[in-house]
Structure formats: structure tokens, C-alpha cells
Length: 314
Image (cartoon, rainbow, N blue to C red):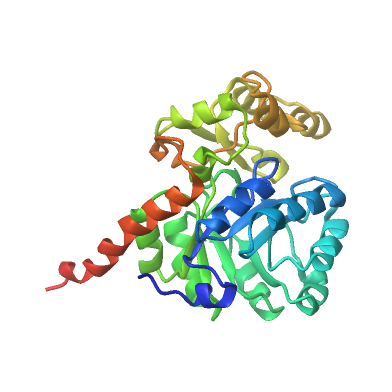
């Protein structure tokens, strides 16, 4: 059995997090992952506070196991959601797109484990100083907002820079990636794209079909000009955005071009105007299956690899 300090800290069976994907990771998916022994995470995204509260209450109704909420700190509702997770005493909060320092005291008073997503050593050190419980080191292979460093390069550097448990994210979809992350020094992994294929994931059937039919070169990164690079599937929207990004379109018009595109993909399956977020491992996602089965397969593949790792040493 894979032993991890994260399991004891959070009360989960396996150190596998489900990414808090905006518009995608709702209370139903989070509960299913937590029921399967991992840590399900609700993606708050740009949703108003009361909408997030509804998803928290949905998750509570479906599981007695711990789950989390991911707060995107650039959201106009970040302050509201930060208050609500404390009121609801959500066990875990993960954060992205900013510095959560101003919320840390209130969250810790509420008994919340705060686990920020970091993409650099400097941010990892800052989050360690302000009292994070653990860190998610996310490489640029991931879907959605991405940093510059790859997972292979980032994870060991973050592990060297902090005494906190580190969760590896970006480009992990199976037991091989899970085992590799642990060998790099991580205590667990976070998977987003793999859970897009979960039976409990409520994305539009067209979105799910695109993931299941993805190839190795199916993603691209846009948004670097505005300082918020995003990895998504190569679709008409992504190609048009890339042309606009480097074609002299003003920043405000470029910003407007992306507004609502993820929702169109998730809810309507819009092939022309939708932004279908996905990581580079999308081609490794081959079938739809329950979230619990995904976790089971990842763990069962990783365990013998970790046991046999010594065979490579004479």
C-alpha cells in the first residue's frame, strides 16, 4: 500500500487529488472522487459565492469523506468564496492565480488545510512561510492556466525548497506518472484531464468525446501576451485566438474574445466558439469510467512499479 503523509493529514485513502477545474469540477464529481478514496475538489472559478455554497452542500450530501474547493484568486468573487468556505468548514482549500496570504488566518481558524498551486520556487517558499499545509507543484503540461516549467523540472526543485508535502500536477494520468512523481519527491499527485473522462463528470458529451479522441499533439497554449497562458485543445476558437493574439488586436478586445469560451465548451459543446481545456496527456485518456475506478487503476499500476524500482540498481 502506498503510504503518504498526505493521507494522514487529510484523512484520505490515496494521495490523489482531482483538479479543481472551473465550470467542470462540481460537487457531484468532487464527491465521487472522495468516495473513491482520493480528494475531490470543487472548482469555484468565477462563480458567485452562493453558487459555490450550493456545490459544497451537494458534495456534503453525497459523501462523508473530505473534499476541497479550489479558489481562483483573480475571480471578482474571491473574497466572497473565501468567506463561504470558512463558514462551511470545507476541509481543504486549494488556490491558484494569485497569493492567498490575506485569507490564511481566517481559513486556519476554521480548521482548513490550505494547499496553494505553485509554479515557481519563489512562490513555494512564500507559501511555506505564510503557513500552507502543503503545495501543489503544477507543470506546464497541465490544462488550463499554465506556468513555464515542466513537471519533471519543477517538482524536485519545489521539494528541495520546502519542508511541506508536495503534490505533483501536470502531465499525470496513470500509475506510471503517479510512481514517477513519488520518485521525484512528491507525496501525491493531482490529475485534472484524466477525470474529464469520469462518468460523474458533467461536461457536454462533445467535450468528453474530444478528450477520448485526442492525440499527442492535440493541445496548444494561448494567452501569453496578456500574461495568462492557457493550454487547451486545438479548436477553431484556439486557432482564432492565437491569430488575434499575434495579429495586433488590442488587449481589451483580446480579453473579450476569451470571455465565456470555457462555459460554451463545458455546457454547450460549442465546437467553434468553445475553449476545451485539456492537458498534454489527453491522448492517454481512452475510456469513460467511474471516478473510483480511475483511482483504483492508477494505484494498482503504480504499486508494482514502486516495489520494483530497486531492480534498476546493481
